[in-house]
Figure (cartoon, rainbow, N blue to C red):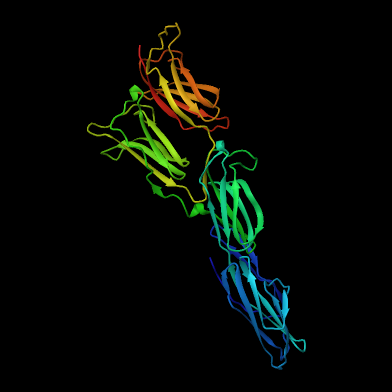
Length: 443
């Protein structure tokens, strides 16, 4: 993180010191120090001494440079020349021995003074000034819904002038969009916006993204990425009360609503009340935006089999949420499936309606976007899949698809209870969370 060394030049000449900094992964950068000129001064030459009022501090840093001279010949000083940033070019010449300057940008500077005597002799001295630059980044929301054409406001504060850039990345650091190309900005506060689109101008896939502030310091681009220092705090989101009983066979499944006041990753499960056992896991660190979400459970496990607690025990619902980093945004852009139900609760696929039409099971639901619906029918006792159907090109809004009660080999399903699972699939491959309902077949 820091280091220093000292050495002496024993020869006359011009030198260009360089510093190579290498991190633990082997990546390195080379920083050049201003050119050092070593001259052989004649006997009786004056000697200059430069002092600074502050050698370090945050930008903007006000510094007063003060020079003094020791001259064996006792001559008067003609003038003082000041190179405040050490770039080899003198910025001002004064008759007084002090000069005030302000370093607006962060970095390491090497101010120089050249004192010229009345008879033309001169002497130089150099000091080092380190100017730190603080930056801050915050977002005005952590949830962006592309269907509502929402945007996220990116607020930044710079303590000093610098070159900055704002980029949106995936969680693994892949670039998605450059919101602000590398630009010079003065000290102050700024606001930019991201509309949820990538470099190609298309809405990004649903998921978690992060905003990173890049800024230049000593000519090297630094990353201000809050994902490495914030987020991951566990908490229990508020939820609705759980009834003591539920009746999935009568189309009255267990419904639990939970509310997130900020975008989070959610783990939810149904376990045993008396024994530390999970029967079914609904979500494992599943990302959700802020708002209210619903879990609907029909008493089945992940394999589609109906389950019940051990004798003398009962079910226990557990839910945990984990905060996202302070620079993270959950983008909601995928199709959502909701309000799933089936009718009639019990049906005979071999029977006929009063109009002499085959009796079918109607599965009703709502789509937030146009999509293909995939229906998977499982035996609720064994968990085996007996039918898989797709219904393409469904419109957004209320929809209904039909199951004729037949299995994939064209036979009528055996009498019993079946789990109907429905998933919405977009053209880009995005799959919604699946919804389930129990359906009884009886002859």
